[in-house]
Image 1: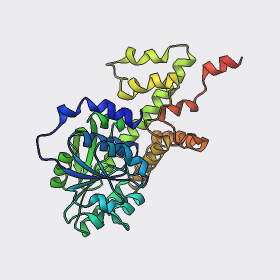
Image 2 (image 1 turned 180 degrees about the horizontal axis):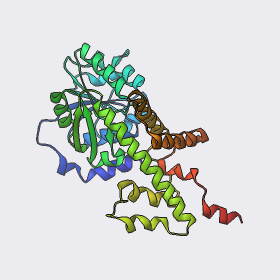
Image 3 (image 1 turned 30 degrees about the horizontal axis):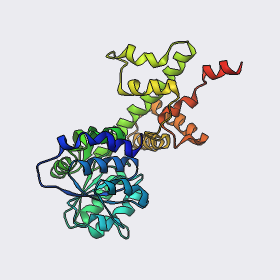
Length: 317
C-alpha cells in the first residue's frame, strides 16, 4: 500500500480525531515510508508539521497535507516543541541531530527529541547522553504496526527515557498510537523493540514454513487462518501473512534487510548478556540468505522464496 493510499484511508478519521487543544508544532526528520505515514497522520489530526528529508520528493505528499517542507533538519526544528526522528541507522540519527545543519542547531534548549527509529540500545544511550549535554531531551520510541497502523492511529510504541519526558512524548504521539508504554530509561524502548522483532521474525518464518507444508500436503493454506482463529496458534501475523504467503503476494509493507538489522541487534544484545538464542540465529540466517540472494528490499512475504513451491514443480513436469 502506497503513502497516498494510507492518506485516503486516514481521511475519514480526521474530523473524529481532531483535538480541541491548541495545535502543537512538531518537526519530522525522515519522511520515508514509515516517517511519511506518521507525518500524514499527525498533519491530518491537527498537528502543525515541519518536515525535512534529504529526498525532496519524500516531503511532497506531506506538503500536500499542509506540512511545511524545509531545507535542513535545523530549519525544521526551529520553533518546534518536539522533534520526531524516523531514520534507518544510528549514524544517520547522529548526523541528523548533531551534524552540520542538524536538529541541535535549530532546536531551542529543552526541546524534546523523540526517536522513532529502530536502532540499538547502546547507541541510543550514547545519543541521549549527547543530547543532554547539549540541553536537549531524548526519548526512544520505536514502533510496531508499520505504516498501516500509523495511518489509523493504532501504533504500538515502546519507550525509554525520563518519566516526564516519556509522558510528554506520549501526548505528542497520542494521535498515531493506541498503546504506549514506558519501559525504563534511555535505550529500554529499543531493547523492547528488539524483543518484538525476535517474536515477529520467528513468527514470520514459522508461518512461511507452515504455508509450505500445507501446500505440499494439498491443503488450501489461505483457508488455515480462519480455521485456526481464536486458537493458540492464532496471531496477527498468521491472519495477515498466511494468505499473502499462499498467494505469493509481495506487496511492500516492510523489508527483509530491515529484519536482518533488527535480528543482528538482538544477537548483539544476546552476546553481551550471554543469552543463548538458537532459534533467533536460525531465523537471522534465513533472512541473510534471502538478502544475499538479492531480496533484501522485498517484503517478508518473500520468505516463501526460501521454500520450494510444489505448484511450480507440478507445472514443470
